[in-house]
Length: 332
Image (cartoon, rainbow, N blue to C red; front, side, top):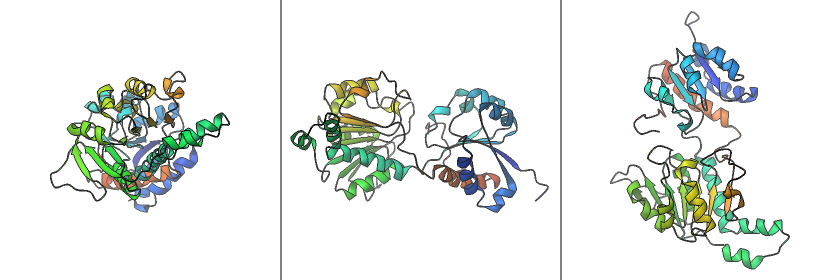
C-alpha cells in the first residue's frame, strides 16, 4: 500500500481554507481513501495553473479551456454544482474526460427557497414591504393581493430532486401539483403529483397553473423554453418562479409580460446575465422578487459536495461506473 502512487486530485472549489477542510474531512472520513488519494487545494488561478498539469482529477465549479488543455493527465472533472453549462466548451465535450455533478444535494434548500417566494406573494409580503418603504398603512391593497394555497395549482417544469422535494412541500399546503418532465413512463406515478405530463404538453401545464416553477437543466432544448408565446398561455394572476438557469426563460419577454401585468409576478433567483446588470428593468418592477442566485446555498455546502465526491472517488479507484455522470447526448 505504501508503495502505491496516490491519485492526485486538485480541488478548486473555494479559496477559503475552512471550505477546503470541510470538503477534505468528508472525503477522508474513509481512511482507505486517504491512503490512496491526495487532495491538493488550489489557492488562486496562478497556483491552479502550476498544479493542474499533474492532476488526474479536478473538483471545481467551473474551469476554462486553457486550464483544461494544460491538464494533460486529466481523466475526470467533478463539478460542485448540479448544473455544468458553465464548463461545456467544445474541447471538453469532444474529449474522453469524465464529468460528474453534485446533483441531488440541492433539493431541500432550493424547494424551501421556492416556497418562501410563493408564500411572499400569496400572503401579501411583497406588497407589505413596498408599503413599508413609504411609511404607508395599506391593509386593503395588501388583502386584495393575498390568496390561499389550498387547491391552487402548482406547475413544476422538471422533476429531479428539487421538483420532487417541492411537490412534497406543496402538498403539505394543500396545493394540486402538475409536473412536466422530459420522459414519462406510462405507469409512472408519484405520491405528491396529481398529474404528470411530457414536455410537449407544457402549454397545458402553463394554462392550468397558478404558480409555475422552472427547475430543468439548462440545455439547447430548454433555452428560452418559456418565451412570449408560453407566457401568453399563463393566467393573469399566475406567478412564475425560476430556480433553473436564467436562459430557460426569455428575459425580455418576461420583463414585457410583468410590466404589462400579463402575469401577476415572478420570483427569480437566476438570470440570463449574472451578476444582474444595474440597468436591468427587473430591478424596477414592483411585482418581482429577486435573489442573487443563492437558492442552493447551504451552511454545510462543501461537506455535502465532499459526501457526493467521496462515493464517486471510491467507485473511480475501484473501476466502477460513476454516479451523476454527465450525459453528452442529453446535455445534463
